[in-house]
Length: 472
Image (cartoon, rainbow, N blue to C red):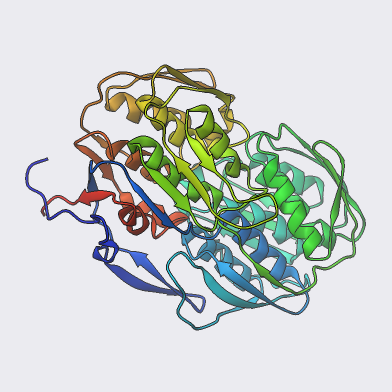
């Protein structure tokens, strides 16, 4: 790239990333403005301490439970991102009332929301719920729509319309819903007369969220619901759902793997709850240390049911040193990179969101990295298996896809390239790590991180990541 603006995001210059205020549904947040293309500039080992943003997965589960609860709940450390705004907007369209409590909060902290629930008595929205790019919103609210006596329309952005949801729709039809879709994809029209309960089967191979969606609404069925989910890969997210349901007073019980029962005729109880750190986001911060030989502490990381919390164990296999809080409690997890990364072979199905991250680190490692059982990643924001392989090859990496396995052979000299992100936040954050080492890596549409981590570029700059934009 010829001609560039002054380097942005150098050490200690987090404020160099400008922002704009966005207001939706009473919530206000700062969304970083970034250009269409960022060139990442290698600047040596990236190190520092910071807080990861609140968890998107936990935020969206708590928003659903608070909206279905009877009474007013207070949610603290709520993530404000495109995905969580889509969820909040959809729940308000169904009758929940949400207000953001005022007050300044430190960097890395989330919002505090007051949410008055519906006790499960939802209204029919006058217009279609807009899910944007949020697969979680699409899936969870498709199940929530069964509690509406009437019709709920749900639509989304073009890339969301490409994401199949047919297995969940089949399960909802078996529970009595009448559904119109575009071949098992949005836009959707879901007509229901309430949720009777009973036994329902769902193929959750494409997403564990299909099963979580059914679990979340099951307490509002007229009778007990049994949910039999097959093909679940990232089962830890179901544990996350069940843990939330128990805290909110409507627990489910595990009969066997993938087989759950939830008593009907219940409601969630309004309460105060906090959102923990986002383990998936933290992985992208630790990856910056892994790629550059640095040391990064995520101050609010702690033991978690989020599957991506196990990424630090994979980093240890690659040679990293990981410092965890003491067994008795506390927060803060530090990842210190080894002198040389070692390739790994792992089953990626429990942590599919980390396929781009580990693919990138594999290209920088010695030896071979093989990520198996990656079928579920084909149905994410993009076909991440294909996209990761394509962009690594663009950089000159030795990479191949064999069925549902990604193999990356490290040790090659990588070259400059412009990386496509495919409207996928994780592609942008993953390939930022390789740009921190390889000169001339440009990230197209870096602003797609707004989906789950609006402050990513500002936080990365706090760790020393440098980047610049081309002159217009």
